[in-house]
Amino acid sequence: MSRLVWLVPCLLVGPAARAQGGCPNEMSLVGSSCVDRWEATLMEVRKDGSEVSWSPYHSPFGHKVRAVSKPGVVPQAYVTFHEARRACEAAQKRLCRADEWKTACKGPANKTWPYGAVHKPGTCVDSGRTSPLGVLYTGPDRFENKSMIDPRLNQLPNTVGKTSEATGCTNATGTYDMVGNVHEWVEDGTMHGGFYLDTTSLKEGCDYTTKSHAPVYFDYSTGFRCCKDL
Image (cartoon, rainbow, N blue to C red; front, side, top):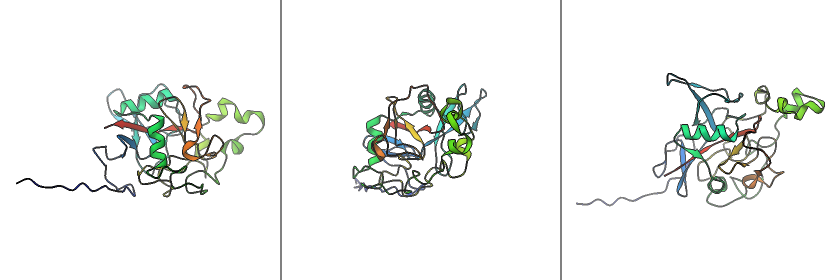
């Protein structure tokens, strides 16, 4: 005798929530795509095949790395578009397309911010944070490239937050920190969502888009997450 099975939609509400619709455990089903629930961190893949954690404060240039998505860790910054794309591919994923990234960020209610239509400072890692360049540098050197890639920047207190530390910076998709914390590269070479010091100057929240940087650019604010086709 055949058995009738009811498919009940599940609302993801925390790190322990289960995967949906065939997506890996660390990803959420958003439309017809799987989207990493947390901003990426990296594992270095050594020549013997072993893996060790890569520092989120250092560029992975010249190293073979694999993207990982998990809660409670400092997300990777200091990463170029090319390095982000290779890291996703090493994880059998890809960089998100701009449209699917925005769909996950805005959630089923299609709001400007992950949590709603109106900005609530501090709900995401996007307000009241220390400007590390202002602490470590003065004068015209502050915005030179060598200053922007200083590994000390995101190690200062009250700068970048750990993934899903901002528990309200989410929606029914179960994706976290899509606004604030670190910028996120997407497949068209732009970055979305702003970072911990700015989520409003280039449109607001989920509509924030940085188009001015070349794919080889990186600094203390540049991060990413991965997506995957079902």
